[in-house]
Length: 136
Image (cartoon, helix red, strand yellow):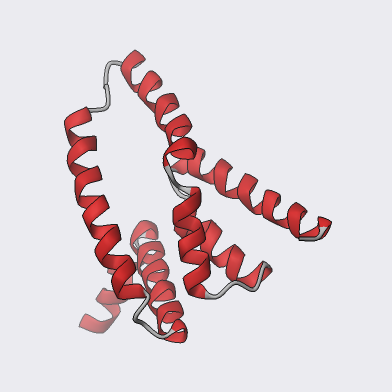
């Protein structure tokens, strides 16, 4: 691996880490597209790499920061909710990854893009505006 590749990977990691800590995103929204476009990874490689990065040691630092702050502000994080979501996430990730490896890389990229587009439209509130245009 060359020096330029090392620099690009560290830069992608820093950007994903900042956004992950700032607004709780990073893996799917930053890492996957960056690995596909800057490192020329396949969609499958990028998604697998993103899941590897998001493993316990990295995520725990962000979680502990939010946990400490939430506890101090009187709105602690409920560990029961974390445990239930993690259980579902574990099962869902296993199922989703088994489905993904069976999907053609071009189709997987389109599905990924559609999920990002849908999410961004929802977050911006534009989805209601678009639906309103079709109701006329």
